Amino acid sequence: MDTKAIEQHVLGILEAIGEDPNREGLRETPHRVAKMLQEVLEGVAYSNHDIAQMFGKTFTNECGSGIDSAVVMKDITVFSFCEHHMALMYDMKVNVAYIPHGKVLGLSKIARICDMAAKRLQLQERLGKDIAEIISEAAGTPDVGVVISGCHSCMTARGIKNASAKTVTTTYMGEFRTNPELKNLVQLD
Image (cartoon, rainbow, N blue to C red; front, side):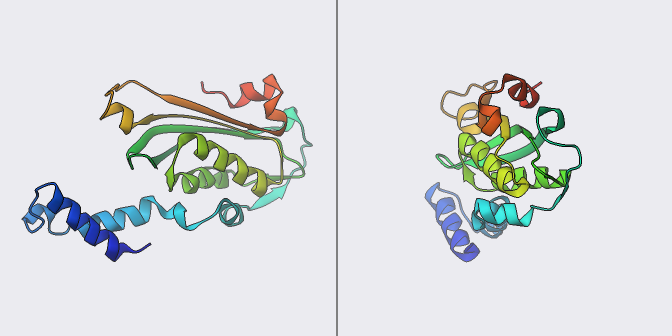
């Protein structure tokens, strides 16, 4: 990520909106914004495959496979930025479920995968797809379900300004596509 270029562009934005970038409160803003973007958009540097490799620590599954051994993690908190307006997508909860096929992911890896996939300019629909693809590769399973609920500041703070609007997206792979019992495991509470 070219933080020096970001600093120059932020300086230009401040000037374009009529601010004085030399006033005390704004002197370091271009640098702070560049550092913030480097942190919150870290995932841009990695493909889904890269993330699966980074967080693909697995353990042998001794509990069999099928709906009776599904791994479910709910209420994973993430935030992201909408690629259309670069607006914050917030108060996001991610539910992930998968059926192990011989191995299971370390639990913290599921949350880390969600977090890193969110650290990109995203669409909520694509975020669910990315998480499902990464979990599938990392855990070696075709059976993954992801449900995301979140607020979008492009809807709540601008435009229609509907502060209570939430968006829910679902991504189902493998057995989750056709099995209602599996879909119920990953649904929002």
